Image 1 (tube, rainbow, N blue to C red):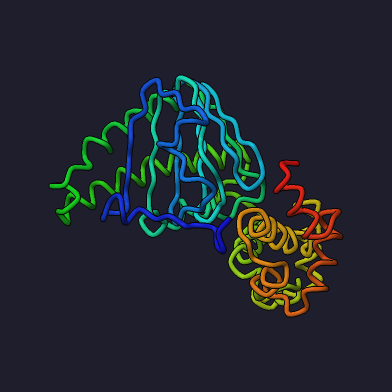
Image 2: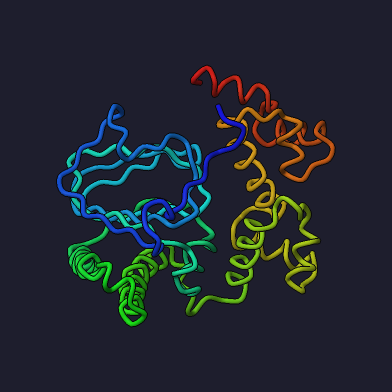
Length: 290
């Protein structure tokens, strides 16, 4: 194991921050490492669109499976490993986060439900296929190197990812338009927690950052999600702790400091309370394949 979880970006593949590949009846097994970089993060978004076939991969300790007509995406920073494919036809698109409009990113990054593959109908399949094909045809060096051409490509990318946003916001009943104030507040809280969980540990600090009272924040979070505000803070700490325990050689003390806890004994107690076992036991189980 390494001391850190590798993070890959698109700079070694493309200098423009956009990669699009057509997949035709592709099968990838565990012995095929073309798509497998091992356990890693990416600094960019990945959009996978299946027209047919079956795909499976591990994302943050959850096995994700998509089949037939389906869409799925990975957020920057999520830890994942090699994808397995069975006769997959579809599209694979990677794009730097700063090339996407905020309105689209907010749907993905501020979601209040677990991200999972979503099956789509023939109408969506045709729209996404057409847009992806036009995007691929447009991604020539001449277009990418031209200011006007790159604007066209970004517009096409916005259209493609915008359709993804519509599909996911519709499926989760969490579209930006028409949301009540409570849901909007939960979204703001969740995205802030994802960014600041290493330095901000209490609901009070998030309430202050959001210019509301602690009581109002905790009431709204519980009403909308069924969980406490502290639960969501601890979940971000837990998932990052599990990533570091599983995929690095950092000691429990080093991981504790990395996550913003100066008292590693307190961190160990907190981890044990949430996960049901101490950090060292969790690591041993992972190393033994449990």
